[in-house]
Image 1: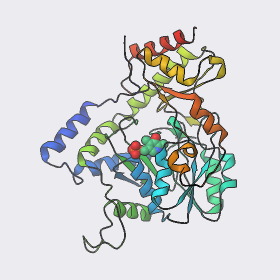
Image 2 (image 1 turned 90 degrees about the horizontal axis):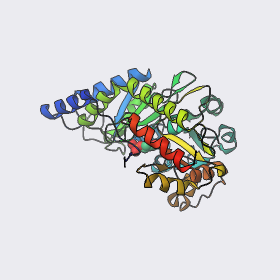
Image 3 (image 1 turned 45 degrees about the vertical axis):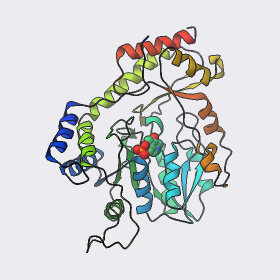
Image 4 (image 1 turned 180 degrees about the vertical axis):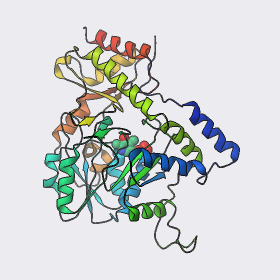
Length: 370
Ligand SMILES: *Cc1c(COP(=O)(O)O)cnc(C)c1O
């Protein structure tokens, strides 16, 4: 029986060569040429002024919010349906995440519910581009501009995705990417903060490196963090980024193969792409409808028995024990709670082969008796 992992990365030859070069030259820590080259290449790719490496998507989000001066007493609008790091980053600053339900088609923040959740304490809106599909940004920018608050894109799942032609992660005041092992570009662990604002960029660079005084190193006027990426990771990132066009093409191929192979399976809802979005299908996410005749959990087990690994959708933030324990019970969030129970994603890694994808499609058709 063929086993198909849910995600397997591709490490191009350049990436291996760069990492080896970093090792052989001894530049293994957070100084070295690949840090700057990766930051410059990433900024060029996005068409922004500043790209600043960090240790993860989580810390890149934290740096973004901290550089905006967000702290205790402040509120940040966050979608209820997201990976927990979006909410954690707000909590690290001492601010409060104010959760908003999701769009039932594309699972990103429901922009019609944002305005009602804005208070005098709101300092930012954090849209998350879920599973590689852009959030609907125009309504978000119009609310943010009207109230004079920041937009922080969580673009951890959306390298190369576009909204009305603009690259995700290039539109907000300050934005964050992740390079975790299953992301479209990976450095093993890693992240990037992106902004056009010189003052924010300067604060991010200071905060990620322990807030050394610009006048005298090892004098610290504020509380900083060590969120420095290593040259080894940047070497891997640069070698990956050089192949992003190819990676995005592979994602389109995957999505087309799944759509062709699964479109007639009753009760299996395939991902929706809005006409204004270029979806990069970070993960190929499907919803199990009642007419499928089996629950999501039973479907996942049936796939597992056939050697196919999948993952459930995120548990919504409001359902997380860690968030509930804060006592600021919000909601209800009918859409995010519903999709969290009915959604899963199929094997979507960049290393997916034709043979593997055929095996996944056949297994699903077999389980669904079509
Ligand atoms: C992966 C992810 C993060 C966190 O990134 P890490 O690099 O794992 O810290 C944040 N937000 C979203 C939406 C993610 O998918």
